[in-house]
Image 1 (cartoon, helix red, strand yellow):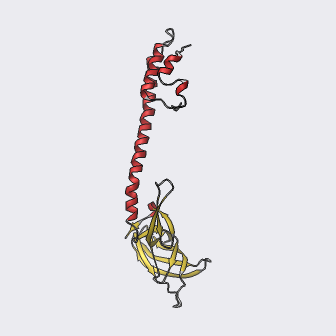
Image 2 (image 1 turned 180 degrees about the vertical axis):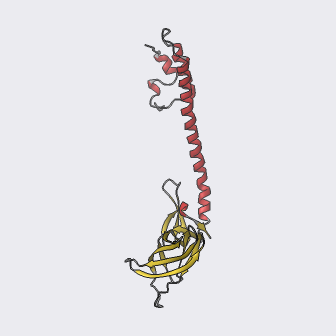
Image 3 (image 1 turned 90 degrees about the vertical axis):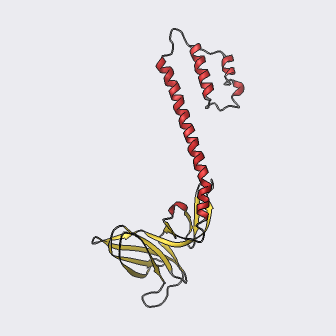
Length: 222
């Protein structure tokens, strides 16, 4: 059995006196090479280490070390991007953004939303429901080409009266290629403020009438 004198271990900084100061699971490259050299010097002459085994241990250490360095680099890069993202998010305050939402606030100015049409549609219909799930109104936007299109509803009902202010649920459908499809709906509302997550890596925007939304949820800015 190959043995290594305790004095050699202490000289490498790996002895018992250093266990409280150095993480047991981490050794530097210099320590690793010294340990490998010591291992070669103290190996059993009748069972010497194979060259392939020796090179394999070095390659394994280099790979692990390289991955750790790469992880540190990405972590540093990610951290450096946070202030820039914060400045970009701050510039959105009081600007209109499109965010996915099937809930819309109706106020004295009505409400403005948008639909994402995947292909030319012969007709697009918007249906508005109250908090109890009852249909309040529906109206046609007509034919639309592919892409994102905005619309505005002033809150007027079919009988000419106006719907009370509050939160409403919106569903959008379209006739595409002869089939009736449900479309994704977006709210078109201003950003009131921004907030950061607990670790400062997540940026959220507070959208008027909807509350906090992830910065990544924003589809368009106007």
